[in-house]
Length: 225
Image (tube, rainbow, N blue to C red):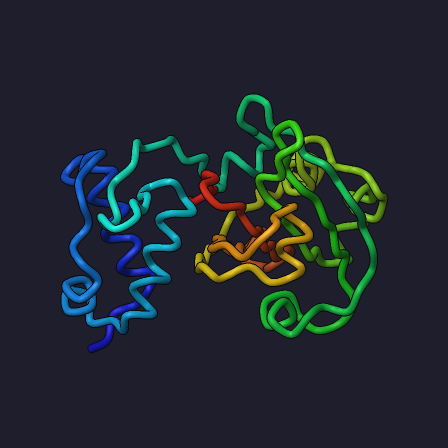
């Protein structure tokens, strides 16, 4: 049975978190990883790209891939509460009513939703570009989602506070890709690079009320719940 990119990344990530792989340890060659996880070479490269973008491993020219110094990950539930790392600034770019893209409609339902776009920066460096698509019903409780401004601290936290209905991260999917022209423009990158793309599903009372997608610049910590 074939493995998965996410499964390989999760296994290596867990070994690093548990300390069975430590900074400076070298990952096995691609051929060995292909056999171990029953993956193609391209799938192995994608899994390694995820770990690189998360800061778990680094490549050394001509030597291989090595475990880097671990960095704390901020969990998705904490992100809902609006917690950011020191020096980070959230820049809200826009809010507009749009028709839900196909992949969003699969979770949120077809029709109009509120599309919110933002970046997270540290100084002049763009760490993350993200979008969320929010059910229009939420605007009755959080009218700010239709305004070209950030919610304080997040729309999920404001909705929870006002409605008394907690918002939870129902699922997260993480993958890696080579940047598109849109990615490079959003992140201010000059050339192709591997980036992590994370999609999140937000639910309240067993109902999907929002979907999010974050694109993380190379080497940045990501929010995993």
